[in-house]
Length: 381
Image 1 (tube, rainbow, N blue to C red):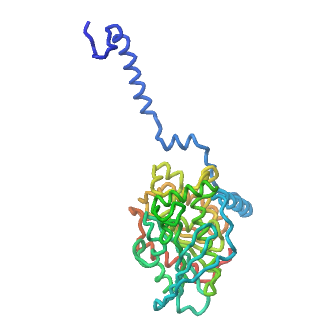
Image 2 (image 1 turned 180 degrees about the horizontal axis):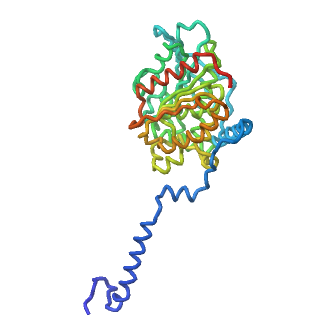
Image 3 (image 1 turned 90 degrees about the vertical axis):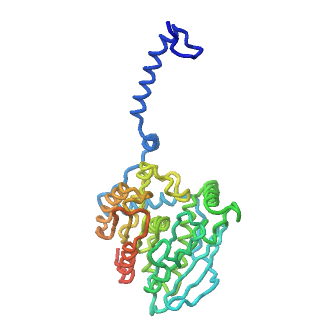
């Protein structure tokens, strides 16, 4: 009888009895491989289920639910240090830029960091002006930060000067790890960029809070300063930004009713859909809030904005904002606006064939939206 293999186990009798078992085992493995679910699905199925969000039957029930969701959001962000009623701000310089003033300022955030920012003040204002809190993007460009307001790099025009010339007071700060704060984290000046962002995230998790919560806390301190300025009409304040700036915008709208409207560009992300698309790398570590999917997904956060007007502008090819998630958010949030009798105040425009960019058409829509909702008398809720 011939030997069928060269292995030291290939005794003729062994070969005859082993081959069928090996063959059928291999065939079984092929069948199992064909039936295996994708990793994202297995991870989600074996995780605690995310409760489904839906609008209740009445406005009164929604107001109760809204309070519960907002309270839970603050808990998820962690044990954030209390912020003062008004930050102590130092004005470092004031420049005459022709039709507007540019002030550079800084404040101590009370949590170990100095926060620098820019304030644009229109000269032609004859009364208190509407104001916009501008949130810069991420893009891995840690040296940019608030300088984005002075450039037409990620936006079709320079946000600060253009908005100031339209009559808005505009304020923006460097978020943690960006601009002048790049290299100012717990890892020291040699640890910059993504490494510094990772260390800042780790530090905050160890002390029971999130980097995302601290970023938003600084933004809210900036808002505290903005509404305290004598040039500003505190009843007419909006927020806007692209990418990370967009996410900051709709989270801030959800957390603070002082912001009357907002425009978020290129970052309307539903987290479960992001997992399904295996696109978690599209967002940095700063973005993740532990435990959030144990309570709700993005639609619950967006719903907190109601009944205030908000405009979302997203490309359908934006890998960080899967289209299916955008559609679910709209289907869940619009009924809340309808309860509030403000159904048309939630607008989400999806641009076909467009990725993670700020189109001139998006820019024009943002300007028109801000003029419509901040230059007119504020509507009563």
